[in-house]
Image 1 (cartoon, each protein chain N blue to C red):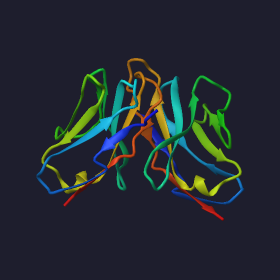
Image 2 (spheres, chains in turn purple, orange):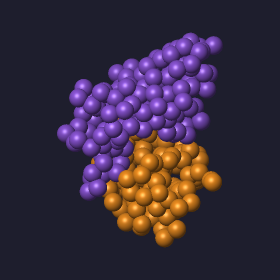
Image 3 (tube, rainbow over the protein chains, first blue to last red):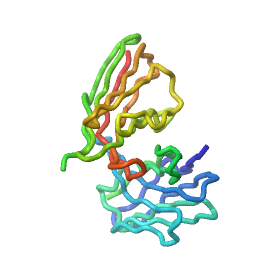
Length: 117
Length: 112
């Protein structure tokens, strides 16, 4: 079974600074998707960024970028120029790409990010 | 375009009762997945429906069930509620099986 591990329960960052959230995963599959979701206090889970395992290029979405190391099964999220609105719980998630496999997401335990003004 | 909607947003039930939660996916989305979120267990997959068929089910007891209607709306039902069923229940929709999932705001269920 796939497992996702987030070893940092809490992180803090000064406004306008950069922070990196860590995620590792375990799988025997070669094709899969990885995601970072953000859950602010409003509870709405918002997709931040996604990465297809077959792509070597790291995904980037504005101030958010990932460092995907497939061999190390590592998928970290970098937030640049942190803003107060970035404060939230961040979840790393895995999903199989197999057509006959499960479509469900496997989530890590989350990292609570605090942004200090 | 309206997002995923879930009703009700908050619910308080007593042990032994049953409850039905509703999820309306984004227009055009045919896949609906349900997740349970608790402080102790985190986010866990309950089940997924696509075109009115259950495609996959997580490791939950039979008290948890669901269904999907022809308009893609989905309901989940929990019978004989237990205190441990208190959780945030999240619904997510996708256009097709395998596409990105978009989450609703969740239903906060409290069992007393």
